[in-house]
Length: 427
Image (cartoon, rainbow, N blue to C red; front, side, top):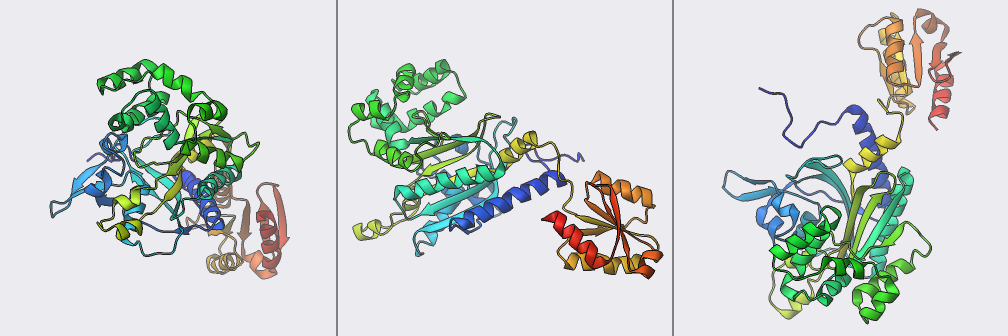
């Protein structure tokens, strides 16, 4: 038996998991600051839910990369490839709820795709979505959320923004017929991965007549030029409204080439990049038709009552971790702040360690009966800030030997005094 992971999956080391949990905590606090509430959904979905024409779309990479399986009842299932489609299914089956429904979810998703730096087959997405509102303030909220999160993480970013309606107008202006527009979008979305020549070839293989060079020329136009070309374009109006909230913010960039690879997008599109390491860290957009696509009901009244405009943004935890690891010089190896070394005082030291824990200090204790020098080396290797040595003399005197590992200073202090010193350092 080979002790290997399934291809594309990986174990997370303690150092990486500590960093991941720190990021997740920051995300959760920021999501909740903006009024989002948590939900959770299964990693396994019915395959027909994942493959619905109004979900990823037949030509989406996500469908060709979906892990397929069957249960014992021979029902077709698939591992979720994102958190948006399960959210749409959840809202569709629980549609009697207060609107707007602002949810966040952090969970693993799966895509059977080629592996390269920053791209895994098993990865974690961190989503925030607003269901029920078609106001551009919802889209603006998602963008502001991203700006705040990456500022807190200390990662310089730029956010490329486009609108699917404008993208569609440009393609139609270049002569692509209605039935081929979606397919053309899927191919043009590969311009950042393939050469212009290869994109042109793919369009031709689909029998789509579109000049990629002309498309790139129109995509370079600013709002004023596009206004003259597309009078009263709804997508352009929505874009201008979004940018009006962020005047002077150079992190936001209009990019008319941005399409994103899912057919469920209907309006705004966002893509987040690290400026220093040129890595995509997240994205999202508006998907006003996805939830209603899952709902049945033929009457006009029923149909009108089941319209669920929606917008969301998603951050890739694994890519954020990769970027931070390249920017950081020191890894956090443990969350322990104090290491207790008993010298013939195991029971007394156990009780004292608990007093530090009760004071809110992460405390560990020697479990290996090592000598003092080896315990000190252990604490040093894990970058533990404080060590307390407890022998019989310390028990008798009521004064502990507290060593500050960073300052290389030793204090003879009571338990209360030691707690004050450590808590002050933590703050």
